[in-house]
Length: 152
Image 1 (tube, helix red, strand yellow):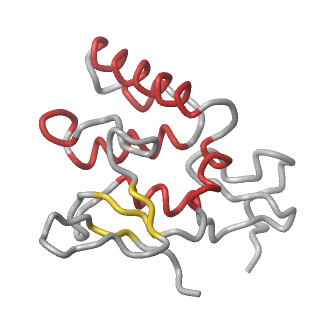
Image 2 (cartoon, rainbow, N blue to C red):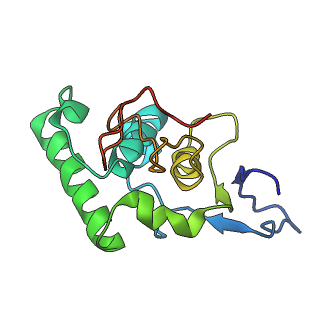
């Protein structure tokens, strides 16, 4: 079985979404609520989405923004999480495990689907078996296994 990849959606005549592929566009469940243009710009929109997938919140993510924009980011993240329900984004992303993810973003540019592929198909696990989530903590956030013990 090949590793899941990002697929670029197309409106070309005859184009069909490949089997085993899930659309992760707006306004769907997995769409990035931070618009690229006009809005946050591609890099910032993807960065904010990655932060949102961490399941937490840090004022450091928005310290360079004016208060109004920082509040918009916070409320957008909270609304997205409420829409998905209880639990952690890693748990929600299990539905995407092993599937290709389709978005409109060009394949040679940053896309929130890349972040979803990473969280849905983790490569790194600690010896305790829990997922490694480096953007949240260098060690296991469940049982405190130190960062030096990922599985090979």
